[in-house]
Each structure stands twice: as C-alpha cells, then as structure tokens.
Length: 121
Image (cartoon, rainbow, N blue to C red; front, side, top):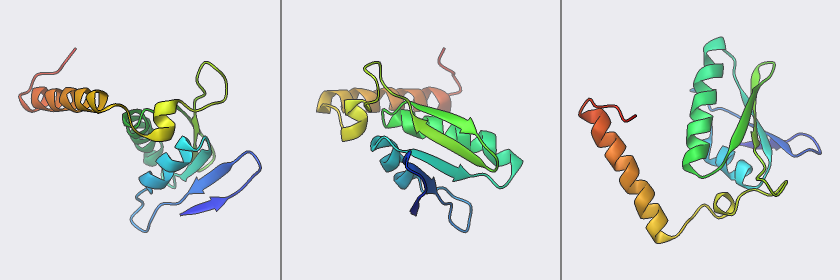
C-alpha cells in the first residue's frame, strides 16, 4: 500500500493487520530512488525492522540509510559516488547469470555453515 506524501518523494509503506511490512513495495520504492516511512508503533519494532530493512535491501543490491523518527523509520536509498543516481543493479534488480549464481552459492554455503554450527569469520 502506498500513499504519496510530499514533494521530496517520501512514501509511507503501511503494515498489514498483523504488523508485517509490505517488503515488495518498499524495495520497489527504493529502486525508484524514493524514500519510505515504515510505522513502528512499539519500541521493539525500531531495531528489529531497521535490521530487516538493511538486510533485505542489501540482498537486492540497494544501499540504504535508516533513520529513526517519531513513530516511524525513514528509509532512504543511499546515493552512489556519482551523486543522486541509484546503482544500476538496484534499478534493474538483476545481474549477469554468473553473478546471480555466485551470490546464490555464497548464500547456500553460509546457510550450510550456520546449520553445521560453524560461524564464518
């Protein structure tokens, strides 16, 4: 669910009745270079959601800044070195087939290590 709010392209991403964030909408907004606000009605939601946001955006190749506000977390895509443009991989959401395969293999190796009780350094 999206509701446009201001000229600076900040969009509120509403949570459903269970309190779950619409992650697909959030990632789409970040890829478009827009900022988003996620409601955090409870104190414990701030840290948990901030961690989730960073992890999910990172998996999609999007660098983000997360700031705490009054009852919300404000998420902004971090500009690349050239200025205001969102990275190419974040806009497209894809890399080459080899890059995707390598990332998948690294994720699977990390999962296997965690499952075996070993923690990578």
